[in-house]
Image (cartoon, one colour):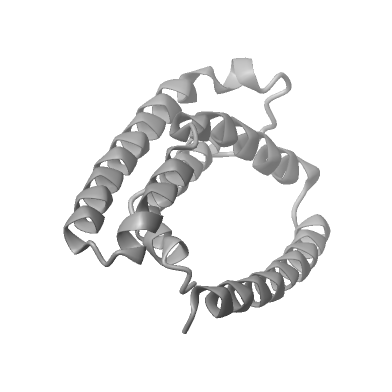
Length: 153
């Protein structure tokens, strides 16, 4: 398949999954609002915002490395692809470690970060699970960049 056809197919697929994601998000949010208390919903938003700030540690490295894969993929330079992917893997493992360490370091300061800390049992454990979820995603995401760069998503 040509790169143009792959790109068109990628756009169609991305639009479809974006629509599915929006619908799923809408329905899950509606269920959360009906089932969970406002404290849990606020906590979810706060933890998500804290981890978004920690995720700035990536600093766009993923986009830069994905871009650097285009030429080796077009030229079928497997040695360069392997070297770039190894660098990408190492970089993302370091980022995951940094996010984990910073996230754990912030755990004792939750009462300061959250002005009116709700009375929810195991709030630090919930926060640490959020941190773990975010950090673990970096261990596999570098592989996705190869698929994106090859336009076979």
